[in-house]
Amino acid sequence: MTTDKFIKVAIFFAATAVALGALGAHALKEILTTSQLQSFETGVRYQFLHALAILLLALNAEKFNHQLKRSLTLMTTGICFFSFSIYLLSLQKTLGNSLPFLGPITPIGGLLLISAWIMLFFCIKKKA
Image 1 (cartoon, rainbow, N blue to C red):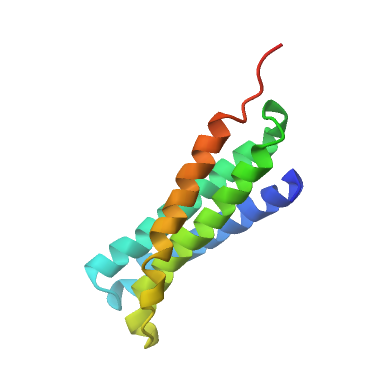
Image 2: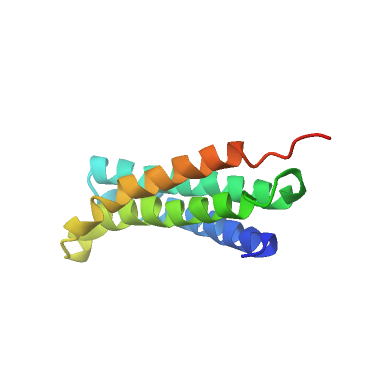
């Protein structure tokens, strides 16, 4: 994926995080328990923060080595695993589905996000 595509992915993640945050603050407030709503909001927060990170990193790609794309890919995948599994787990009763297989997906997403940040540390170009 090119850095231009990561910019588009970041914008998509940011826009959907705002939309999902609004959904949680208004429509889901009456439907979900406090605990479910807090989990949902955690997914939104992580999605939005990492969307901003992807955007800033992609816009400043020249400051990093060729491994930046791997870090951005891990971050993108981590958002999908972490945040989207939290959304579905929070909404599973409301949707009338049981999705227990998603339980292990959330920490895998978290590990992918952590791995992306660690990899990013090694992507910084050295000054000549």
